[in-house]
Image (cartoon, rainbow, N blue to C red; front, side):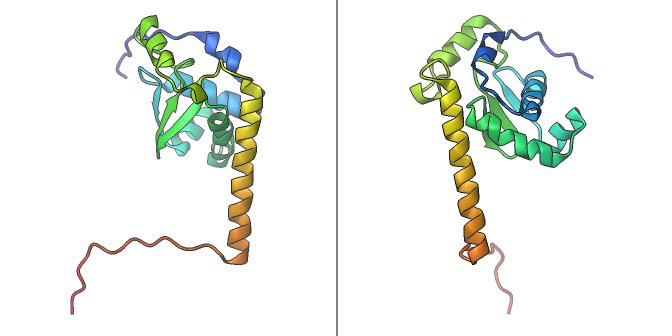
Length: 153
């Protein structure tokens, strides 16, 4: 296994972690140990579950809590970005620059981070319920992509 370069991180950012379910805390800490410099975590839900000896569904239920808390952003499938206040960097100045570059709505030290987490998580639950209701009514429009293959006659 290749040896990683030592990274610098601050645990001060953990002061902004709201009350989360235990699985979400475990996932957050695991992601912090798996991150690359700057806070990028390259792992699928299956890989995260395997690293924590959990079922994939537990990861899928825990991740929305971390996203609502603004501690993790989903970049795309298998790529997650940790918030700069908990990400590891080569030196403290890099972390300070990353935090200063954040838009105000992503700052954890502005406003009440606990209330913001609860508000964002409720929005997630509302959207999930709306989708389930639409699916139950049969109002879901399937998304089909046009085929790139040419029809052969």
